[in-house]
Length: 193
Image 1 (cartoon, rainbow, N blue to C red):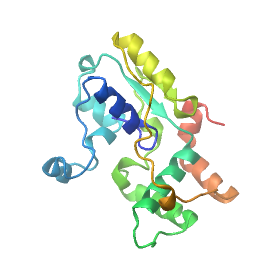
Image 2: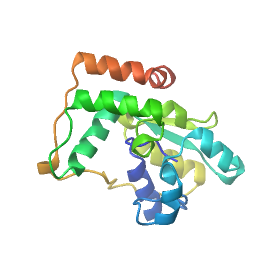
Image 3: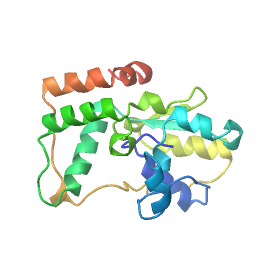
Image 4: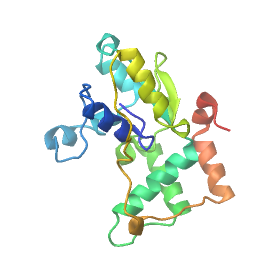
């Protein structure tokens, strides 16, 4: 599993390109329509409580988590949703933020588990990486730990959008406060200031 909006799709793409086994992934609902109809989120977005029940830890050679500052992560999710809207009917950021945080209280899997705090994806045996530090350290650690060569010379930003579908968001101080309160555990666990 990976924390949504933290570079996981780019990491998965590089690992597949380098012949690493990356199972339990459905990148689009039509890839495994039956499975996705039965699940509350896509397989790669399951959080630690579920993953630790489903998979024996002996199944993994190396476990790591890639996290991101919660403000940047939720802004990225908003931008992703905005880019998917063809009708321009997206709520303003602050209104959307309050709405998805409210939805999360009713269904923690809302938006394919994209809103769930990153701390809930963390298991005690995982090595923590921060997206802000870049992906080179992630691939170096994987290469060393698994004793494989990873060609990450051209690490793709897989989910980037064309510039004409982009939007700039600068959260207001009140919005930042709301985000910091909702993701308080992430700030504590991962040391974001």
